[in-house]
Length: 366
Image (cartoon, rainbow, N blue to C red; front, side):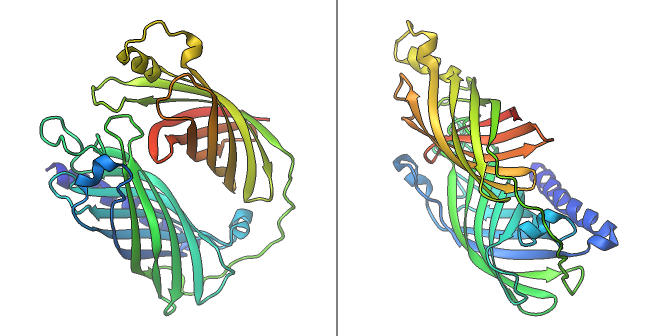
């Protein structure tokens, strides 16, 4: 019964964009795409090699809306395709991993000039995934990769599209999928799954795709400074069930290179309650506030899509009294400009390939 409910919810989610697209006659530039994938799970930690018992197979279904230039940012990004994807992963280990289902919105950005026959696209998608068999201390203690059913999901993909007819397109390429819960429930090594895919797209709407072209005003290239406050919840690697809150305050400065790209950096301070637990597990109780605070500097890149930005940041702790997780940190995710100044932040804070926690926050851009 639980499986039937879960699949029904996924199918309902997939039907929502379909019904929305079909309600308005003027927005009928959309497609349905089906892909098959083959790949494997990367053993990015030595202690998870026992989970890899076979290759990964994936069935995928997408509903896709093709932008046509009605808004200026459509033209700036070479008329990207916006979609909702559903992926079903057979993980090659039915006893300890089971299957993984992912539902995620995404954008396909053109990397080549507009061509009616061929297009090379980069997909960026972020959503949710459901793992059939997570860690359980009694029934599934060998799954040390993921400790929760519900997880965050990221899909990055290089996709080549060939036009076969007015209604049919061929898709092929390769990409990477990642699923983890950012230590909200341990263990949380996560699953990194590279795959190659092949599939077909069927155009359900207009046979002739027409893109509008209007003049776009020049980009303002003044440096933008922002302050962001964020928090997250995590567990330690040893699954005890105890949860700890982490806080961060970030000062960022980014310079636009053009409408799409910004580079910059910043400084940030963090306070992670899990650090206290690590100290106490080592028998240290005379720590002070300054021993828990972590200060880091970072460089970053942002890919901008209208009000949405996709940051990728690399940082180094200049003050950290504990060796736990090392000196290098990273951040990837989304930030959205609610208005001219207010920023909504949803990012994943990591140390190399190990996710630490999801960050939710608000910021102000000057």
